[in-house]
Amino acid sequence: MPFAFDPNACLALFAHEYLCGHRDRGRPFSLKRLGLTFHRLKDCLCLGFPWQVLLPVHGDTLPYLLRDSCPYLANEHKLPGLAAAGLNARVTGVDEAAPFFPPGADNLWHWMTESLPQLLALEEAGYDGLYIVPEGSRVVDESLALLGIDPGRLLRSGGAYRVRRLVVPPRLSGFSLAENMPLTAFLRQRLLEAAGTVPGGGRWYVRRVGTRRIANEEDLLPVLDDFGFTAMVPEELPLKEQLRAMTGADCSLMAHGANCSLVLMQRPGSVFVELFGNRYVSYNNMHAVRLLRLRYHALAEDLDPSSCADPAQPVGAYLAAGSRADITVDPLHARIVLETALAPARKAGYHQPRNTAETV
Image: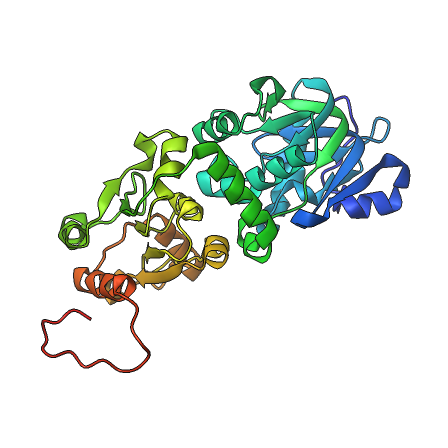
């Protein structure tokens, strides 16, 4: 091992904390308009096995580990072990690079809400160095090609790099993007410019191909047909076509998942209906709802007591399994939600239907 590193004794710091103790090792620079502060650090190791792990080099020792490596507190405990494993790899020297492969970065939602906005912000600021990005991710490769990033500027996360000037992005969870509307608006504008728009309106039912699919889709489809929905399987389309199609949507309906990040492309004031199971509800897309003033409706599956966990199973494990479980949608509930969401605007006040068949 070329460097001395003790995973049990390393001090975990954020980049700005590290620079407070070692002012000669770099400097921060802010993009105030977008609410971001990056740090350019001197001489760091950037490891990717499988997450980015950032280690400032001090001679032949690695006494610090940068917490900016991971946007999620719950996963920080893995970083020392990953660093120790990554040091066994062959290290490549790089002059300047910015790492964009935190946990989950090869996933559409994590990439679109955590890494891509910051990468584009660096481009806007005139950065012309290299980017370290996830390898083997269609989402990453198609989005960067769409946005005109030269493939020659990309390094892959499977390597280990000693970087003379490492540009460290701020720690950004996709959940916190709802607090940064300038950055959200900037991301949307760049994607609109790259993908283009389609005129008119449209109603998209975005289908899932992995876990968390609609278990009784055959019962839901006739309801969606009554409201003029067209089914889309994003994985069957280039990313540009996915983004472009959503720009004409006046309503989208989909199971909770990565594809929900596409709602950022919808028309302002349009409708977004998100379907949840009864053990996993997570509001990941409030940045788009807030920016575009979307009329948002969350429809959760009714709780089925027969599905309750064995008393011996930890509650956390039971709930976590819900993130992989398929969803059953009550067709009547879906119809009522769509009647409400898509009805013409009415004056405030109680409306008494003339008969039980009248649509509100």
